[in-house]
Structure formats: structure tokens, C-alpha cells
Length: 302
Image 1: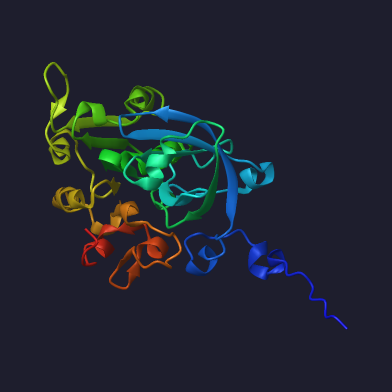
Image 2 (image 1 turned 120 degrees about the vertical axis):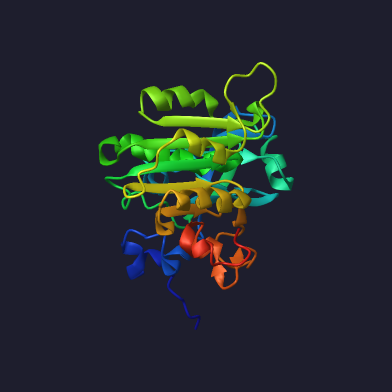
């Protein structure tokens, strides 16, 4: 007599009936399943970066997919591999997910060769997020260097959609050269429609370009920080965290109200490969968003 084992349905598990909190490690491990997705548009930004609009194929999965500013997904190109990419779109956008990808390796190089209509896979979302609810009623200072503007687009969209909940919003953005500035075509929209104060600077401006030349910390000369009523979010090369946060500390801003993203340390997203760990901290699980007080005490974090 053959024994028939009933099919196991994970949806019957009690934890699956609740809306997942992606900041909890125990719930995070349930996000191993992927979403079949389609690239619907590719927007060239610079010689090395492209913006991919990716739509989850199944309408129900697309509607139920939810993330918060600062989280990331694992993007899989079947037969090639997968890479962690920060989400760079509005969390209220149910039509597509925007991912800005820099060509730096095998998988990202193959992604840059794709055309709209290609099927890819998405896992996630993963990681902690920027504490937008904690910032309600305060001014927000968003500081980005280079590719760091990518994860900051999500909180920019968030504050625009909840504009009455926040005070003054200032974006400080630095790049090496004018040709490396990302999303410059949106700056005027952010100023006029969103009411954001946008400050930009480049290290090498070149001849005939108007604007400020120098490093990103030079922009602190152009702003006044209300240390009692401000939160700061810093994204970019980890080496800039120390200098930017030092300027913020001089202005009196507590380190617990400075938040940094270590998205560059992301790997598998599950804490399995151990390539993201800093000491006993797994960036994939405990981050990528940390308050600066925590990060400054983590050796090799910055």
C-alpha cells in the first residue's frame, strides 16, 4: 500500500496570514520566493548607469508587492546570476519598480545589454528602511554622493506624497564631473513642484559650466541646520560618511538622527553568504539603513 503525503501549503502557516514586517529577521526569511518580472523600459542616464523600469508580471503579485524607502531587491538574470539593487521609485507606484544599475561586473554588464521585453526575476524586498514616520514634523536633510542619489529617490517621492507631514527638505548632491550627475532632469521638478531645496556640486566642473565646484562638505556653507528639528540621511561612498557626519555633529545634530545606508555591502540579501557581515552584524539583515551612532562603532563599516 502506497502512502500518499498531502501537499504542503506554506500559505496555511500562521505567519503568512499577517502583513510581513521586513525589518524582522524571522519574517525576512520568508521572502525567498521570486517574482517573474518584465523589463518594460530602459532609460540611459550616463555612460555607465541605466534606469530600468521593471513590472511584476502577475497582477495580484504586482498589487501586493510593497516596500519602504531604503529597501532593496535581488534582481536575477536567469542563467547569469543575481545582484542586489536599491529600489529607486515611489513606494505607492504599483505599475513598476525603478532600479538604477551601474555597469560594474558580469551580471550588471549583461543587464546593460538587455532590451525592453526581457523576463527577469525579483526577490524581496529586503533590509531595513529610512524611518520616515519618525521624521514626521521635522526638517529632512538628504545628502548623496555619486550613486547615492539612487536610494534617496524613494524618500524624495515619499515626502512629496506626504508633504504636509514634513518641514523643510534639502537635498545636497555631489558628483565627480557634470556628466556623472544622475537624475539632473528631475531637479527643477523637485524644486518647483515638490518644494525641495536642491544643492549640487562637482569636483571637476570643467570650462564654461556654471555651478559650485568642490567636495560635498563645501555645501554646508550654503545651509543653516536647525539641529533641534532636523533628521539627516546620507548615501554614497562609505568614505564620505565620516566627513559629512562630522560636519553634521559640529552643527549639533545628534548621531542618532543621522542615518546612513550601507547598500554597497549587499550580497545575497539573506545573510547566507556572510559577505556583508561587519563583525557580528549582517548588513543584509540588520541594514542596510543604520543610524550613524551604530555604524561609527562598527569596525570596517566605513
